[in-house]
Image (cartoon, rainbow, N blue to C red; front, top):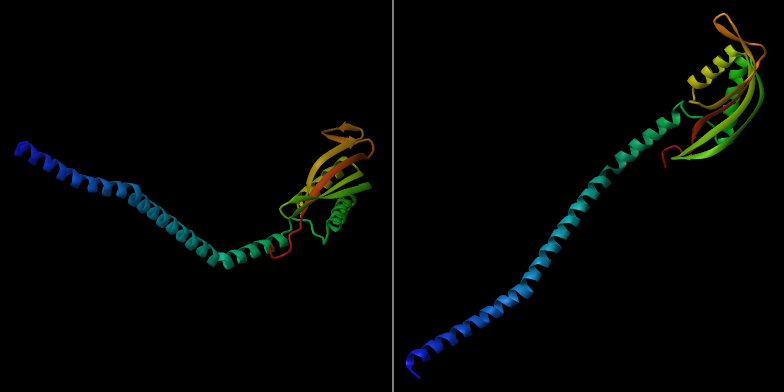
Length: 198
C-alpha cells in the first residue's frame, strides 16, 4: 500500500471517529433533550395559564361582596314590586286573586257565580297562580271588569274567556237581552324566592 491511500484512509477513519460522536450527540439531543425542552415549555405554559386563571378567579372573588349586595338590592326591589301577587303561600295568593276578581265584578254591577284555582311552580323562584271564574255581567260591566283586571296591580293575564248570552244592536252599541254569562281564566305570578335572593 502506498502512503497516499493509507493517509486517505486514516483521514476517513478520523473523520468517521469524529462524525460518530457528533451523530450520537445529535441523536441524543433530538431524541432526549428536545422532548424534555418541549415538555418543560408546555409545563411552563400550563403553569402560566393556571396562574392567570387563579388571578381572574381572585379578581371575581374580590368582587363577590359587591355582586351579592347588588343581587340583594335587586331581590328587594323585586319583592317590593307591585307586579307580583302577594301572600305567604300560593293558596293565600290564590285567595287574594279571587278576591280581586270578585271585587272587580261587584264594582261593575256583576254577580259572581263560582271560582276555583290552582297554584303551579313556574320556575326561577315564581309560582303561577291561576283562577277560573264564572260571573254574570252586562256588556259595559264586562268591559270594565276586564279593564280593571288587566290594567291594575299586580299584573294579571286573561288567558281565556268564554261569553254566553244574547245581544241585540241598539244604535251604535250592542245591548244584552239579559246578563252575559262569562267564564274567564286569569293568572298572575307570585315570588317564592326568600328576601335577600338566597
